[in-house]
Image (cartoon, rainbow, N blue to C red; front, side, top):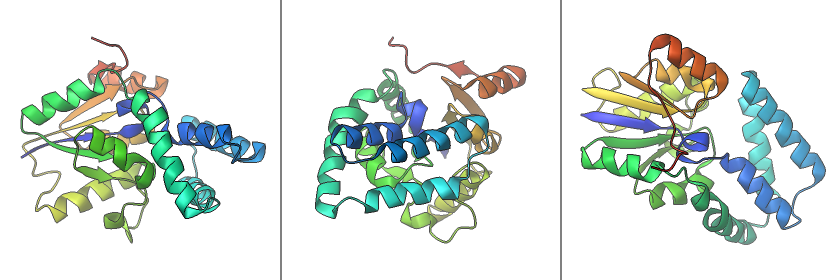
Length: 216
């Protein structure tokens, strides 16, 4: 079995899904300037490699919980349609199609929340999603972020009767240095539109560095 793991934000998507979600809610007058400032602070910590992911995930849950459930669902659907799908990296669809045609198992692995990502993942024709709050990861010792992504991937693979070390070949496509733990565990790590630190690491280790944001 061969498997490809794909990061979502800034990889499949040419932007950050949570930022697009906040911008959508802000355009509807549904978030305060303080909420926007808090999110910006989290994103600075993420870029610097010092993110408190548990605090960020609680912030996201609090934000979603502040919206009436029926309205929340309608807003998510509109955000996916109007902002997320149009923000897919231009080459992402072709890459996914090529991997699928080769019989590769496709799994999106993301530290974002499932409700916002699932419709876009389905739009890409990908069945498997491991997200920050995916039910199959409940109770694991670490969140689906950084080193925790390795734990969540192994857990998901075990449910399929597979294991990371037992795969014939494995890829992980990511933009972020925060994903180095999983990049180091696959046979074929690929840096996609990488941040500066991941780009340096990839060049030093001889990993492919590609762009999905440049149309063919």
